[in-house]
Amino acid sequence: MSTPPPARQPQAALPFSSLPLSRHALDRDYLGRNREGLFDELWGDPATRVLVLWKGNALLGANGRLALLPTDRVPDAELRLYLGRSLAGDSRGLPIVAAQIGDEAAVRLNSDPAAWANLRVVGNTLNDLDAGLFTAALALANWHTSHGFSPRTGAPTVPDQGGWVRRNLDDGSEIFPRTDPAIIVGIVDSQDRILLGHNAMWDANRYSLLAGFVEPGESLESAVIREVFEESGIRVVDPMYLGSQPWPFPASLMLGFSARVDPDHESTLTPDGTEILDLRWFSRAELADSLGEIFLPGSTSIARAILERWYGGPIDDGQQ
Image (cartoon, rainbow, N blue to C red; front, side):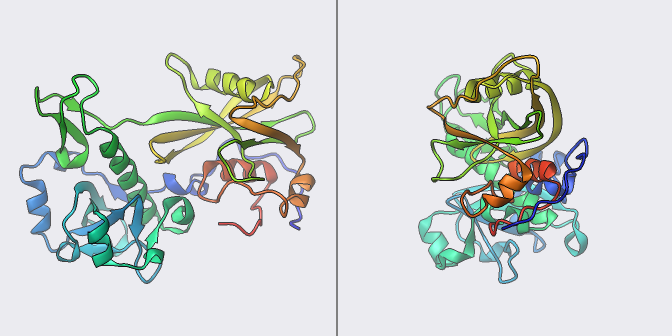
C-alpha cells in the first residue's frame, strides 16, 4: 500500500518536465523541408540518422534509447519524414529522418519483438530528444496513413515538403497535418476528493480522469464543462488550464485542466452508460488503499501528471 503525502496546495500549472511527450530537443528546420532533392541529400550525408518505425513502434538500441541508425543500415522505407536537426549534446546539428518500414524489412532489421517499443510504454523513460522524435514521427506517420486521398476531391495525395504536407496529384493543392484538441480534467469536490471514471473500452478496473474532444465553435473551458456533465452528470466551475501534451494515438493534443464541483448546483454522479461505465470519488488515502484493486493511467500520460499534482507527489502503483 502506498502512503499518500500530506495534502498541499498544488502549483498553478504542471511542470513541463512532468509531461513526457511534451519534451523535445529538436530544431524542426521548417525552412529546410522545402529543399529540392531533400532525401537524396540527406541519404548522401553520413551524419544523417534514422528513427525506424514499424506498426507504430520504434526500434530501440541496446542502451534503451531509440536506435538512430545511419542511412546505409535502413531497409527500403514505405514513408520517409524529415524531423529536423538535433539540439542535444554531442548529437547537436545531426539531421534526423523517420522511416516507416513494412513487415519483411522489420524482420530483416531486427526480428526480436522486444526491440520494438510502444510510445505509451516507454515515453516517460526516454530523454528529451528521443521523446520528441518518437512523438513527432508517430503523429506524422499516423496522419499519412489516413490521408492517402484528398478529403475535398477524393484524388490521390503524395507526401511533400519532407513529409509535413501531402499534395493533391490532380490540382496540386496542399493538405496539412491535423491535430484533434481534447480536454482532460482533474475534478475535485468540496472534500478535495478527485473523480475517476472507468471507460467502456478499457480493461477491467482501470480508472482515469474524464476527457473528451473539443467540438467545433467551442472554447476549451466550455468543452470542460460540457464533457464533464455529459459523462458524469456533474456540473463544474472554474476550469483552470494546467498544460498540454501531444498524444499521437492517433492524432490528439491533450489539454489538461482542473475544475471543481459547482457548490451552487446540485449534481448526481451519473455515468453516461455508453462511454463511462463507472465513476468513483477518491480521497488521497482511499486512492492509496485502492492501488492493488484498480489500475491508474500510465506514467507517460498527462492524466497521470494531473493526478499526481492533486495527490501531492508520485504514486507508486508498480506501473510504468
